[in-house]
Every structure is written in structure tokens, then in C-alpha cells.
Amino acid sequence: MKRILALLLSAAVMLAALSGCGGSKPPAGSSGPAPATPAAPAGDAAPAETRYLTLSAVAASSGLFPYCVSIGEVLSKLPELEITVAESGGNVANTQELRAGEISIANSISNTDYESYTGTGATFTDDPFTDFRILWYYESTPIQVFVAADTGITSLKQLDGQSFNPGGTGTAASVVMHQALDTLGIHPNYFEAAQADAGDAYANRQIVGAVKTGSAPDSYIVQANTNRPVQLINYSDEELATVLEAIPSVTKGTVAAGSYEGVDYDVQTLCTYQGIQVDMSFSQELVYRMWKAMWEEYPDIWKTAYTNGANNNVPEMTLQAASTPLHAGTVQYLTELGYEVPPELIPPEYVPVP
Image (cartoon, rainbow, N blue to C red; front, side, top):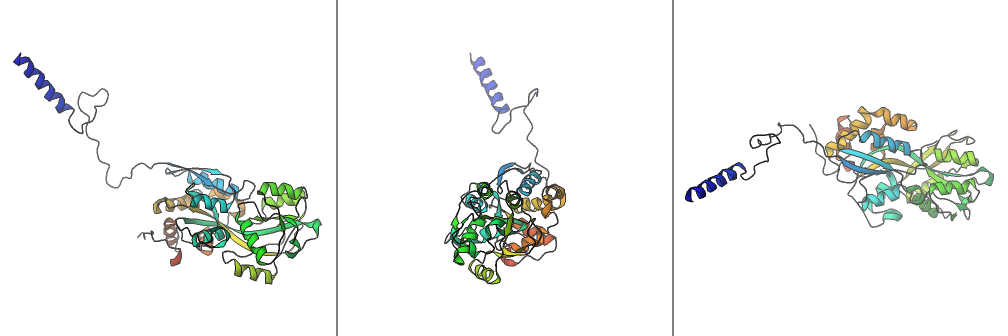
């Protein structure tokens, strides 16, 4: 009996030794314990974990939408990213969603970026938000005010009391136009609606005109002009100076003569810049590689999709338009190109790369 107990105890000890603490299960077909997993060679990066993100873009009717779609296509070539592009309710709505943590990447517009960061303007008064960064600005976008040529309206003052769409609901254009016209003492009968609905209302003669932010020619205004010939409204020098003083987040812009059929004069108006904003979850290295993908590795993709801006100098436009900190990866890339990034645009988390 003692012999049997001794044999059983010995067997138990051997079994415990084979399955000791921290041991691994042998692979199928193996005759012994699995060897320890070898350490990765020095300098080898761990496989990238893919993030599945939605980029909130612009309205699908906007001429900027194809560019946003191309961003998703290019950036999804990086192993860390899989980006789906979705139509949005406008740049103000995008910013509100990013502030709330509902999205991580979105189209943005320079004046809303400034107001969100500083807690100024009608939407973000006394509510500054600094936990976002700008990747780049890619397009100069005048805020274009158009009316039907058959209305006889030729000035901003004549919009007083008229049924007029100030821009799609939730768009930066709408916010700016309300501020601008209030500043000038002009009070239209506002027709508040999404851009597509405003376009239908214009074609059906329910409103005299509308506002659209975009590079000229903008496809939305081109379509409006097809349905009902347009005139673009010019700001006088006095009106422009008054509005620019009241709204420091916008600049002066020009829509060149001939941008639309029947509009044979230069139009002086307000201007903003379209960009891409992200939350703080993007590393400096990743954003640096996003720049490389967009401007060096796969530029033909977005240039084919967005021919209007194919020749834009995005690095220079970014530095010209930015009034809030750029992403650390953006600073790294621009510095590598030889640009001098102003100190106020360099975020505290930036790490210089030799």
C-alpha cells in the first residue's frame, strides 16, 4: 500500500513540474512543453492596432465632400486606421460632436476652430475647449451670398425683411451670417433649413437666396444657378471693415469674375479656411505619417477626387489659416519641410525630432 501511495505522489510531483507556474500549453502535436515566446528584436515595432473611425465630413452636396472621401481612402492605407466618411450637419455640428467625445476626426473651419478654442462667438461663448488639434487646412472658402437675379436685389441691405437662408442649419456659414447681418443691422426673414432643403426652396421660389461656403465655383451654387439664375452679393468696403472688426475669426475673400455663368464681376466677401481637426488620441508619429501618406505617397488619389484644390499649397495654407495649435505631427512634418512654425501654433506635447 505504501508503495502505491509513493508511486502516486511521485506521479503528482512530475505532473506539477510539467505544468509549473507560468508554463504554456504545448502546441498541438508537440511532445513537450512549449518554448517561451522569443522577445521581439530590438527596434521592431509591435503590430499596429487598427482604429475604426468615422470622419464627419460636410454635406454631400458640397464640392468639398469628394475631398473628404479621398482623405478616408488615403488614410485607411495606414495599418493603424480604417476610416469611414459620413455626411455631416456642418462644421459647427462637427465641432460640437468632437467636443462631446462622439467623434475623433472631422472636417473643420477656421473661424469655428478659433471660437471653440477661445470660448468666443455666439456658439461657444465662455466655453473654451483646448483638447483638439488641427491636422491641416486645405482650402480657402469664401462665404458666398447669392440671390436670384430676378429679385432685383444687389446689396446686403436689400435682404432686410426678405425670406433668406443664411446657410445650412448647423454650418459655420449660418453662424457667421447671423453675426454679420446682425452687426450691420440687417434682419432678413430667416429660412432655417439644411442645405439640400434650402436649395429646393430656392428653386421653388420660396426664398430669394441663400449662403454657401466653398471654393468657387461651388457645385451647390452651380446647381442653384441652373435652376434659377443667380447674382452674388458684394460687401462694400465699409460693410466688410465693420464685420471683420466684429468677427475677428474670419478674413476677407474674393470670388473671381466668371466663377459662375452670368456673374462677370469680382465679389468681395468674407472668407474662411476648411481643415481637418482631431482629438488628442492621435500620436505625433501617426499624424506625421498621415501627412506623408497624403502629400507624398498617395497624392494622386485626393488630387483626382478634388481637382479644384489639386494645386493648393497645403503647408503654406495651414500656416496662413491656423489660429489654434497644430498637431505635433503636423509641426514635425512642416519643420522637416523647412517651414518655421510660429510658437503660438506649436502644442506643448510636441517633441522635436533630430
